[in-house]
Image 1 (cartoon, rainbow, N blue to C red):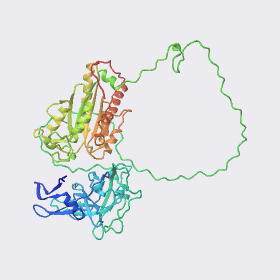
Image 2: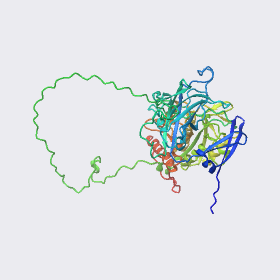
Image 3: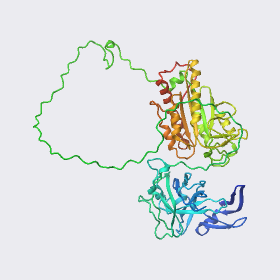
Image 4: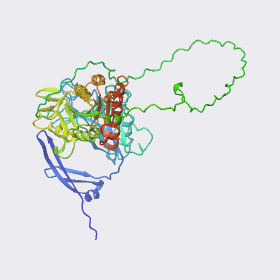
Length: 596
C-alpha cells in the first residue's frame, strides 16, 4: 500500500522596524487540506493572534515581465498638500483581478523612493503566471502610496491597465532621456470619488521574456475591463523613456583604513561632443514648387551607330609571368609578392609587449547598503557566496588577467569617503599592487572591514580614476622603453553606471586617448546604461578606447564574455601601436602561450 507523505507550508508574519524584525504570528498549513477547501482557500488562527489565510493556485510557466515605472509631478499628501514642506516616499503596488472578478489580489510591491515627487522606481521582474495568469488583457490596478514608518501608508492615487496596455504604453523614446518622457502616453493617477488628479506615471520599460507568443490576443489591450467587472478602469495610454533605475541613498557605512589617493597626471582637456539626448525631428514642411514652364520643343534624335570596343591584339609573348597592376616595370620578370599582413594582438604579445591589468571599483552610495541583502556589494556573511561585483571581477577580470605579464595589478576605488573627505581615486588595500584576481578579491573585501576607514558616498565619477590609470599606463610605457620593449594597460572599471556627469566623463576619456591604454567598463545591476553607451562612442583621431560590457546580459555566457572583452581590447592595442608606427618585436617567449 502506497503512503502519501503530507506536505506542509509554514508562514510567519513580522513587523519590520529599525530595531529589527518583530514576530507577529505564524501558522502551518497542510497543502492537501487547503486544496480540498472551497476556492482552494483556508484560514488559520495564528500563534500570536490574528488569522492567516492561504490560497493555492496551479502554477503555469508563462514567462516574465520586466517593468519600470516613473512618476511625474505627483501631488504630495503631506505638509501643505503641494510638496512644499515635506516630500513623500512613493512606492507602487500591482494588483490583479481575482478569478471570480469581484476583487483584487496584490502581486507586487516596489521599494519606496525617498523624498521625491518624481520617483524613478527600480526595475521589477515579475512572473506572468503570478501577475496575470498568462492573460495579457487581464485588468491590473496600479496603486501608488506614500511610505510611512508607522505602516500607515498614504494613498496617492491609482490607475488601471493590463500587461498589453503597459506594453503599448512603453515610453522608451528616441531621445533616450528619462527627463524627456512623452506625456501623451502617460497614465493619470486619480483618487477619491471625484477622481482628483494626483500626477502621472509613465512606463519606462515593459519587456516580455521567455514567451513564445507575446499575447493571447493580437488585438490592442482594452483600456477598461469588461462591463461585468466591478472594478472601474480607464487607463490613459502612455509612452515612457529609458531610465536610470533608482536606488535610495544609503547611510554611510563605517569602515576603517585610510589609503593615500594616487596623484593623477595633469591633462589638458580638448572635449568631445557633450552628451545630449537626441532631439525629436522637426515636422515635415513641404516647400513651394517651382512655377510651371512649358517644355520647349526638342530636336529630332538621330541615333549614331554605336562605336564598338577596340579589337583585342595580344601582346607578343616573351615567356614572362603575368604582372598585376601596380607592380613596377622593373620587376616585370619577377614573381609578385603580396604585402605582409597587418600585425595582430598575438604578434605584439609574443614580441614582448607587457600587458598590464588595473582594476577600479565603484564604492558609491547608489549601490546600496552592503549589509543589506539584495544590494550589489552585499555578500552573505562575507562567506563563499559572491556578490555581483565579485562575480563580475572574476568572470571579466580573469579573461584580462591571463594576458598580464607580471600578474600584479594596481587596485583603486572611487566615490568613497575617508575622514569626511570624498575620494574619487584611492588605493584599495595596504599594497599599491596585489597578486592576481584572488589578491583583488581579498583587497576588495578588506574595504568593508573596520580597518579601512571608508564609507560609501556620492557623487559618482570615474574622471579621477581614469586620469590615474592613464598616468600609470604612460609610466609603465616609459619603463618598458628603457628595457627595449612595449607596454599596454587595460583599466577594468566595475560600476552600477549611475555617473553624475557623462559629458565630463567623455571629455576625460577623450583626453586619455593618447595613453597606451584601453578601458573596459563592466556595468553591474539592472540600471539604465544609456550614458555608458555614449561613452562607448567617444572617438579621437579614429581610435576608440572605452568598451562597455553589460554584465547582467552576458553573465550566463562565459564564452561570450571572453569574446566580447578581448575583441575590442586587442583591436585597440594594435591600432594604438600601428598609429604610432610601432611594429611588433621578435618572438621572445616560445614556451609561453597566450590565448583568448
